[in-house]
Length: 322
Image 1 (spheres, helix red, strand yellow):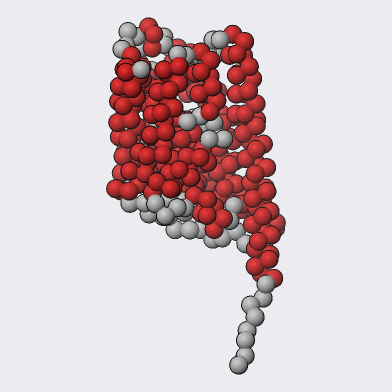
Image 2 (cartoon, one colour):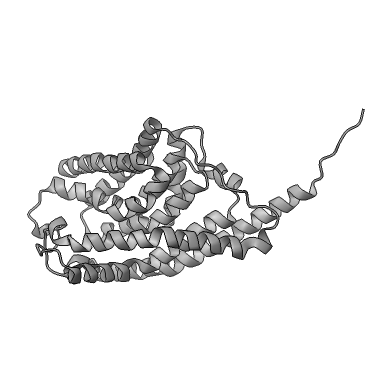
């Protein structure tokens, strides 16, 4: 009886290519985030420890007064102020998203983010979000790439929402400048939103997978520049224009959308509202939703927004109790 031995060379080449892809992805990931997030946040943390004061600034105030009527000048001012604040993180997100699509073998990635249950996918996606430290707008390109590679809905949602809500750096900042009740509310409600609510959304709306693109194979070293460049160009062409348009529209109507001057302490809002804002403000925005809606679908994006609202209400109740 004849036996046929399958050549091991292609498998070895594929394994080596996959390992090389992971190394290159890790290098891009670390370099981009060190420049855009890790180093700036470290400096900010050191400053907050020394001053015990939040160093942020109000983009709305820089763009013009609240209650103002829509104007093109105000819209441009807001757009430039917003872009000036987020462009390093957005560039980092585009580089990481392109590297994810072009360099990481699909089967290796899905071993990490694919789980037998929606809850398992949410846990995996949420844990992957912790080192990124991105805001909701800047994490959207990476979340879209994650979904495009075949990751589940629950894992993608958890990564998208986990970046801003469970940002370890922001929790550290809050611990230095805010009451402990704020930190506890943000952490508890964030865990519920990222690890539980996303699983519920995926469970009831279907945790389907997107078609898996062509695998990264043994020609990786020769094809890396082409594949990476194509992914980066596609992400930039599809996401940046709509990003700019949505930000411009928000700036155009900012006087109606944000009719407040100063921080929450000057608004006269109750403790419960402050608790809700701890989750609702960072978790999701019109800009980030516009960038992920094509890959997540309209109904999943709307359901995620509804989940943010529900958990925000719970956060308000929790802060009131604490």
